[in-house]
View 1 (cartoon, helix red, strand yellow):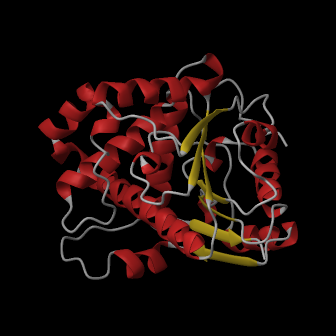
View 2: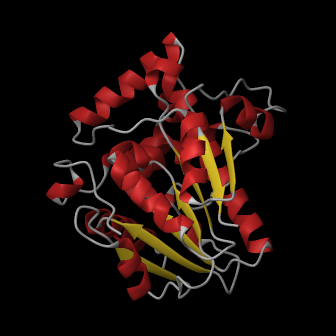
Length: 292
């Protein structure tokens, strides 16, 4: 099963993902700006490298205005949601965790579960870049994690995971954040079909872009702003979905338990008790799908 990318973007040129850096800087700013934390990550500032860490520490208020503030909340919530769902998978006995498009995620380096194997799947250029930041910060890769370099244009994900030691005859939990926007529909559903074919107990959490027609005018403007920004930087957004249709398609793939989480549900779950005005945009969507 190949996970094809969208074409001639930065990753195809061997350049690390700029969107991954922006996401990580928003997570880092969250550690400084928001009390209480939605997503507590003690390595969030270290993993972005000393120069970017200095930038965030010097002027965190740059990440606290307008649509960027809303995006900061979304990045914190989606990371928290993924790790909450992972915690449930661990309680159910799953002991393999795969981060598809891991970017600058830090879970593997603060993993408290001794027998959990963590596999970070990403483009080789992004992995080299991340590892250089971790080395500068003095953060070593634990024995419980494996880097799985995948060129999404050419490589077979199942083969790459197997080669890295992931047992595909046992349940696996996947986190797939900040990726589907950049892939073709065929690539998205190839990956989802692969997960759906894994043993019962397996599951996936992923975010996705909502088709613009279902957003209100302000939400469409925010989406258009970031889509234009990332397209100019070589990472165009190309795939969007209607929530109800996507849920039906997941069930058709064979997932037995599918739940879609929109901004209202996520606000209630993670932001309801806050008095600082931290809010999510209506385009924030997270999908959870389990293999029964």
